[in-house]
Length: 184
Image 1: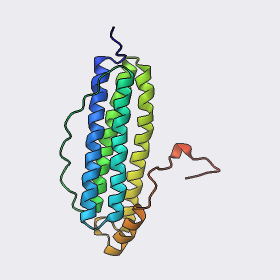
Image 2: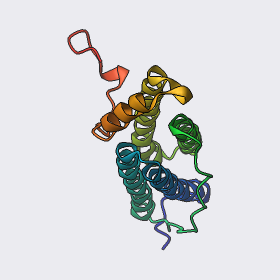
Image 3: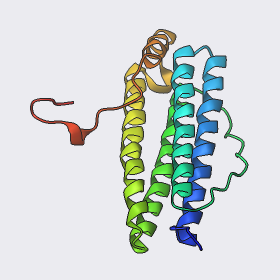
C-alpha cells in the first residue's frame, strides 16, 4: 500500500526547499568565517547562529516530508558564493538570498494550493512568516549600516555596529504584531 500523501510535484518542490535550506546554512557559515577573519566577531557570531537556524529549517522540511510518507533527498551542498568585499555587501548578498528563499516558499504555497494539498499549504505558512521575519531582520541591519556610513563607514562606527549585532536577538518584531499599546 502506498502511504505517501504527497504528490510527486509537491515532494519534488519540498526536496528542492530542503536543498535550499542546506545551501543557506552554508552561505551563513561561510560569511561568518569571512566576518571573523576580518575581525568582526559580533557579525560572525550572528551569522553562525543563523547558519544553525537554516539547518534547523532544513530538518523541519525533511521531517515533514517523512511525516507525509515521502522520501527526503539529501543531495550535495553547493559551494558558497565568493566572500563579500565589506560588511555592507555581506548583508546585501544575504538580503538577496533571503528574497530568493521567500520566492521558493511562495512556489510551495502556490503549488500546494493548486493541488489542494492543505496539509502542505498549512505547513508552508510557518515558512512564510519566517521569511517575513528574515527579510525584516536583514533590512533593519542594512538600515543600521546605512546610518553608520554604509560602505564608507568609519572603523569606529563598524566597531560599534559589530559589538551590537553580536548581542542582537535572533527574532524580529513584525508590523502585524504591533498595536497602539505596543508599537514596534
